[in-house]
Structures are given as structure tokens and as C-alpha cells.
Image (cartoon, rainbow, N blue to C red; front, top):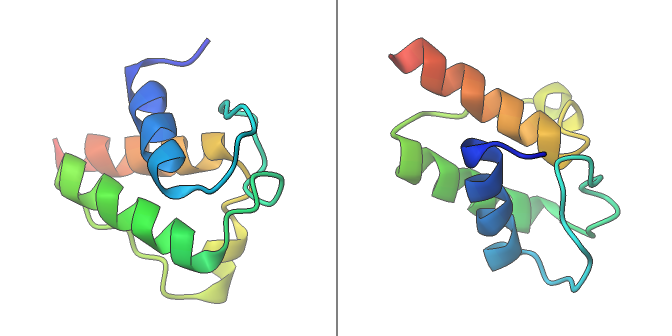
Length: 83
């Protein structure tokens, strides 16, 4: 079961992803066919909504985001660090 943050991020993904597939925290970004441009737009949306800065300048950082849960946990950690 997804928590509030996960639910909000899933909604942000739905707004940018061009898919009719069901999105859960276990959904692989590749399965959802989310490309780098869409992922960047999702990241900007998350940054703006939660007042955080997501650093994804290296290819290694991008490759660590495999599923929706990875994205949620990355945002959760940044939000907690900000508090």
C-alpha cells in the first residue's frame, strides 16, 4: 500500500507519462516507457512541489532510478534532509 508521498508522486508520473498501464511503487520506469525527457519533467514537478533539489547530473544517478519506489525514496530522503 502506497503512502501519501508515493500516491502524490504516482499522480505526477501519470501527468507526464504517456501510458495507460497501472502505476504502482513497484512499476519499472522502463516498463512505463518513461524516457529521460519525461523523467526530467517529473523531477522538476517533484522539486517544485516539495521545495527540494534533486541532483541527477551523472549517468550513475540516473541509472539508480529503476522503479517508481526508487523515485519516491529519493524524494523522501531529500524532504527529510530539508526538515
